[in-house]
Structures are given as structure tokens and as C-alpha cells.
Image (cartoon, helix red, strand yellow):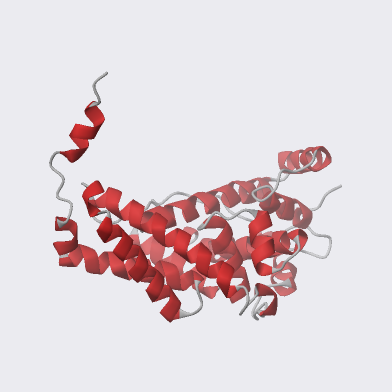
Length: 63
Length: 207
């Protein structure tokens, strides 16, 4: 059974490489049951969006 | 077959006026320098890159009617220049020579966040991030984000920015920085852990 430390690492790596089938399944099971890790996963994606806005902000901040 | 797009592009283009707007230009230059310096260690090189991007922008100024379009474009030039510089810089400072940095970055941070069995420590569990407009328009959020970014050890910050700001792919980052894929992935994981923690502590849980 995957623990939170392992789950969070996969939730980060998901942004950098496609996970394999086995990883997807164990991660899916873990996040279904674990609210904090589910939050963490959303926040990883949020972090990516924030970074995009950060770069774009520099191109779009005159108001 | 009438090409209407071309003629409409030419209408009402203030073009070179942009360069005469001192406030806009000064502001833009400041942002560009900051962007470049975050990623290129040598600040002279960073300034040179900004200079070059400005010059090629000036040469093509007629193509840009709106300031925002101009800005997007000049930053994309800068971004490419920064990537070039990072490739060249490789010879001087590969990321492998940088320190991990101290204060809760590597294993220490992991030990704080997780119990021995690998599950979250109760008070470290990620909380829902409410959106008190972290939006682009919120200057305060971006100040917090800057502080968190600057708080990352050099190695983390550099790899994170290569991935998220410059959108370089894994093969290229590993090649430029002489890293293995798993090394890169672990470092990105730790950078994100730390950034997440910093944003949660200083922005989302505030007030």
C-alpha cells in the first residue's frame, strides 16, 4: 500500500512524465481515500498554473 | 479571396510610439531584467540578453500595434535568449555543482512533513487553497510568490524555473545540467513541496 510520501512524489512526477499503469492505479486508490493527498495533487497543478501566470503577468501587467 | 487581416493589422498601429512611452519602457525593462536574472546567474549576461531582446524588438516594432502584444513578443525573444545562455552557462556552472542549501530543504523538509510511516504529520496536511484572488491582478500574491521562489536553494529554483517558466523538457534539462532523469524528478518534487509549503504558510493560511 502506497504511503503519502510516495503518493506526493508521484503527484509531482505526474507533471514531468507520464505515469505507468501500475503507478496510476496505486495513486488512484490512494487519492480516493486520502483527502490531504488529493489536495496536494490539485495544488501541484495549481502551482503549474501559477507559474504560467507568473510568466504571462510579466507580459501583461500594464493596466 | 481578399485578405482582410493584413490591412486591419496596419490600421491604427502606434508602433514606434511604444518606444517613446518612457514609463512603459522603464517598467518593461525592469520586469525583463528581473525575469532574466532569476535564471541566469551572471547579471551582466542577463542584462545583455535583455538589451538584445529590446534591440530585436525595436527592429520589428512596426509589427506591433498594441503594447500587450509587443510585450508578449519581446518576452518570448528574451525567453529564447535565456535558454541559450543557460546552455552556454552549462560549461561554467552545472547544477550538479550547486549545494542543496540548508534549512528544511531536502530530507529535513520531508521529515517534518511526513511521519516515519510516510503519512502526513497531522498539522502538515495540505489544506484546501481558497482563492482569495491569487489572480494575476493581485500584486501582493506575487510578492509572496517571489519571496517563496527566492527562498528556494539555487539548484531547486533553477530547475523549477527551467521546467515551469521556460518550459524546457526533461531531456533538455538533464542534458544541459548533467543530471539523471530521476535526479531531476526528485529535485522538482522537493522544489514543489517547498514552494507549496511556503505559499500555504504565507498566503493561503493568512488571515
